[in-house]
Length: 255
Image (cartoon, rainbow, N blue to C red; front, top):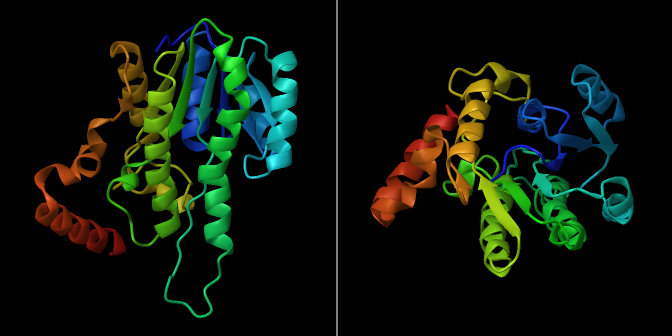
């Protein structure tokens, strides 16, 4: 991927991995537009990064996406990179009676339908550019699910599959598809305690390794930092070894 001279839209750009990636790309001289639901948060981020732009966008709302996409060719005619980062992660007790589907439905709408809808809506604009990229953010949990957050893990597995299919369908175009696969990172995705959890990878270290991979590896398809290898490649040793790893991983995370 060309890491400078782009016009990049980053959803969920107000915090966590999204903000850190936005700032990293901004420092490299890209025109970065961060998108999110909270206008005040977006304003604070752009104020701290002069030249960065923002757009209020709720990826879980089809009307918000349609409105953004309709104005994008006029507002951002040079847009050539869409980074689908916005996501939510919430625990679910599948044994509860009655089971409340609201968390599952919100997770699917944000984590899966949001990227699909936004990518679909902006693909005509991307294909008009000399070179373009669709970047998705899945998770190591797409490959070994955390049973505490079943719908989150399912959506990330779906994003991995969607990314593969999209890449194949666009193979003869100027649009490349890159999947970033984070490990457990120090953000507030699951609350403030995650940001200081020593088991999680420090955010600045994660971003530095991601950017190094993007800059160094030509035609990269999956961006895997070394901390995510045990999850990403857990199935490589066969079913029995995978099942043992799944049990060990979930027991450890439960504690």
